[in-house]
Image 1 (cartoon, one colour):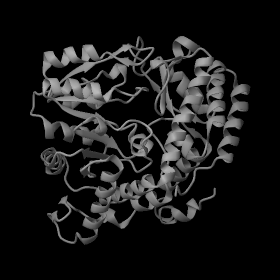
Image 2: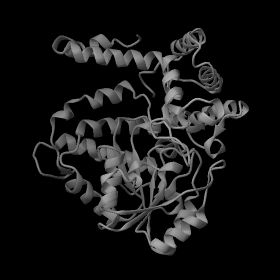
Image 3: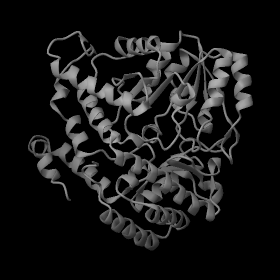
Image 4: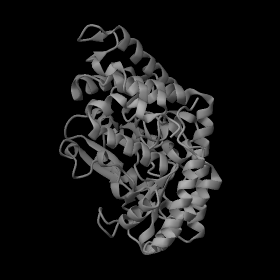
Length: 427
């Protein structure tokens, strides 16, 4: 290991060897495997230090300058820095950096902009939406009314904007929500805004997956098309700590509602160590090198797309314009998404099983796999490695019962990991 993890964890090792073993095990797993889950990434050692810092000791209910406890000199200064950096990254006049995660950010946003019973128009989960966009299993679905839009053609990814408009005219949603969890094309934000203006709805973009790509300017920023609010995570493509955030383009009234919904509406004391880590990651994302990183994410995804298309593997939406791909491996390679996830894990490639549009199978045994390039790009891998990884993935799925072949490919994955170690710093 290039980093002395034993030294980093020496206090835990002495006090709690059982937890120490899990930490070292995870360090080794991440070091020796290729991470292709599109919602995961690596953070810098500076971000990790902030996440485990002294700020974990401090309660700071409220906002900078308006706290309920004393002793806030340094928490106020730190949170203001995080807010200023977030506003700069996303061309926003207001930012709330306190949400504990993306789901928390979405729920707070709903309560800020709506009353119980109001309607949200969002992407259907089966066509790429997220659980927090109104899936029947979620509690928020019992508070607000969710109606959905879908793709017109699942093999091109084109959204059916005319159907979206008809649903909006019929249901008069309070919020039109653009955003996704497993959708690989860019959305037509101008069309969303046009429809929202027609029915008097707020425009919100849940950009959790493409946060970093927007910050880097390599994909479209919804604010450039007049959107009111963006909700997001601070990990994934932004390469920060696990957490959430809400940014408001320019409306002070909306920003005040958002702040009130986060605290005291949804959360008590914010996790100040998490906010400190967000601030560190935001500074990294403001560095000019981050734009190069984000552009490489897209190039790597395109390289993987070509391999899968050349092998006649069906890609949902026909390919990708962002960092992720969703492949129908059941119809193409005669393997379920669950089996593909398992067998690829055997050779050191981690991704996730995923339902495809209009999934004919079950959520736990779906037809598809979802994979992406943020973490592998963090390791310095480029098109050559992305191409070979895609080839290995297909070989493994085609040879799922061939132990010798899998052992051979596992060695190749291991060698790639050694050639491209996880970096400790990004700037």
